[in-house]
Image 1 (cartoon, helix red, strand yellow):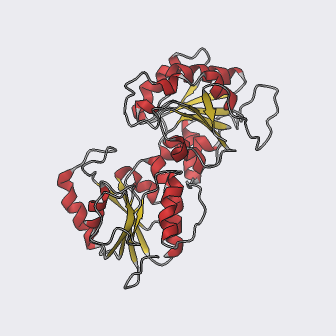
Image 2 (tube, helix red, strand yellow):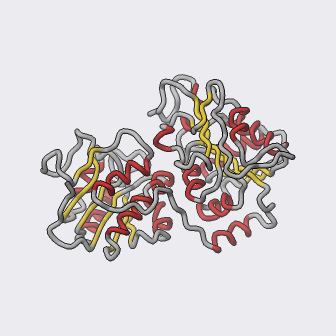
Image 3 (cartoon, one colour):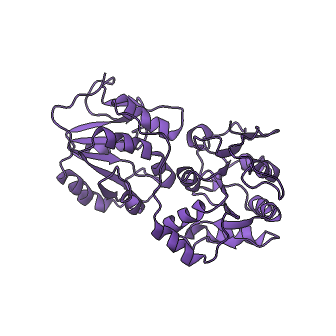
Length: 371
């Protein structure tokens, strides 16, 4: 049974206020909404950083920045700005508000404050929903398993919206490439591998010294290694460079999102933690090896397991809910440099021919590679 609306849907607001990887995972669901309502005006409510990114989406017409919200860990809540934010949203008089944020435990009351004529979204069986029966077709139980993109598509499927693919998407422009060229003139064409040692949570980071050893091994195979990272990660990335015996190219703190994407586009491949860069590589269809420490592999690993490899230790405490591991970070320690190097099929030893589309066998021992 699908929800029926009593009037045409001309103005839609979608709530998803999260970070880069989370937002990229939502692009398939946003495409499905656009295809189902091709003439509707679609507004995305997200965190302020996402405004320039949303402006490039052909499935979004408008963006409104959420000034944080109590309980959101991604950004501090500016509660004094909330009344003006809600007034701005309510003035749009949306016909439909869609909750694509998650289980609904925190955000469903916020969605109700948008004042839309209709609301649809997820619930976890315990959180607040509007005064409708629990089995109302407007509210879908949040899937407890599966990839994030497929969980979100479960809602659009439930609403009868035809899928427009399941992969994330990221638009690059010639200006992005020109910006990179200005930062790194004369970069080697398809001779470099991007290595990204950062992640928002320390519990999601592989050891810097192992990233250094891996980078040394890649240089000795005949590849340039480019160390990437955002401005808050510069110190971390410099520690990786300092522990290397070979000479890397350090781009940490020099790129913005757009020039970073252009940098990935020109690379042979990417080695990174399970973080937003992994999803960016997936959106750009750039081969990657993801060192997954603590996170839920089933939920966050790239869907294309031929193009992307995941190396993860089989420990009982994952997925981890901690910012910092309280018990020694065994999920990181269990992954050896050799495990990750073996997974780098896009950067074989010098003199070894790379076979396009090769499927790497599962790693042996205590590190498990995705199928």
